[in-house]
Structures are given as C-alpha cells and as structure tokens.
Length: 99
Image 1 (cartoon, rainbow, N blue to C red):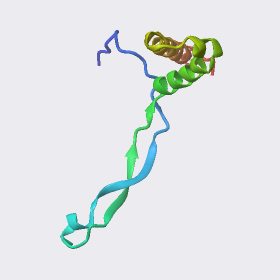
Image 2: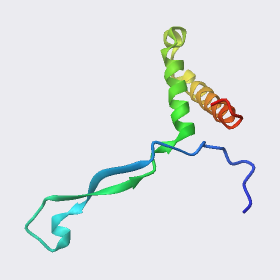
Image 3: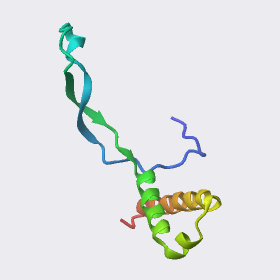
Image 4: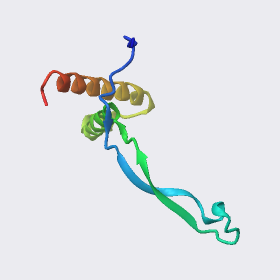
C-alpha cells in the first residue's frame, strides 16, 4: 500500500463510539398511521485527534487577552493555521513518545 507523502497525519480518531440516534420512522415499517421515530445504536467515528488538538489550541489562542483586544476578520485565518500547526506538533510529539 502506497502512502501519499502529502497526506496529513490526523492522529486517528478521538472519541469514537456508539450513540443512540434516530434511524427512521415507525411508518417505514408499514405502520402508516404512526409518525413515531425509531432509534438505534449507531457507530459514530468521532472526530480526528488533529481537529480536537486544533480546537483546544484555538481556544487557548482566543483566550489570550492581547489577541482578543486586536481581533478582526483578518486575524482569524492565521489563528486557525497556527492552531493546526500546534496540533501537528502535538501529534508529532505524541508519536515520538512524549505522551
């Protein structure tokens, strides 16, 4: 299997598991007069570890008082890039045994 060298390591899944969610209606099973929803446990992949780390980093960036005092729309893209750079560094450190 060949791996794309440009592919970003997302660190795998964070918070995978099952959740109870609506999967249909009782009327889907031939009970035409019943509008009740039906539910089932469904596998949910969660989010990538990279996205989780970036969200945490961005929360820290946003909590910085100096950043908040100067925030405007042109700051948001660089801040998002900085958050993902921090996330990539955390994944690299984790793979290197820092965890």
